[in-house]
Length: 140
Image (cartoon, rainbow, N blue to C red):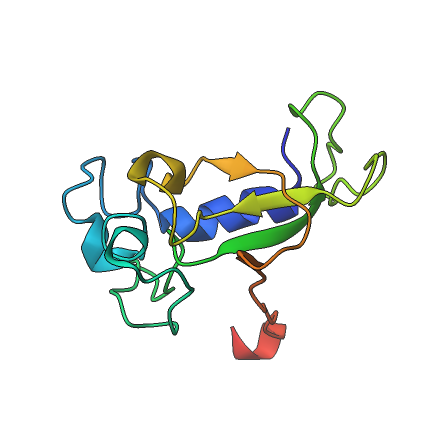
């Protein structure tokens, strides 16, 4: 079982969809929602773009596919065997500094931007993180 943190990222990226991308399975509209190799890297735009220049997903979240890899708290493991079953982040047994990255980047192909895709890089210029703030029960 994936940790809650890893699973929450995918849940937010999908925005209620079970398709490859939050907007469906076809790659045709991907350029409307994501910076990736076809509309950035191949055109010489080898950099992350400012957030919210593309359409958001159904929950109003921008850049969940492409633009910049996003770190989640989990350390990288090849599979989920032995992952915490209580929803905690899988932060033990890292064997280094690699964490799970989600979302893809401006230099990757459409397949690599699928909501279910994950990778395992250490920090570098293609990764970032998403700041999340939990609402208090009174404001939900």
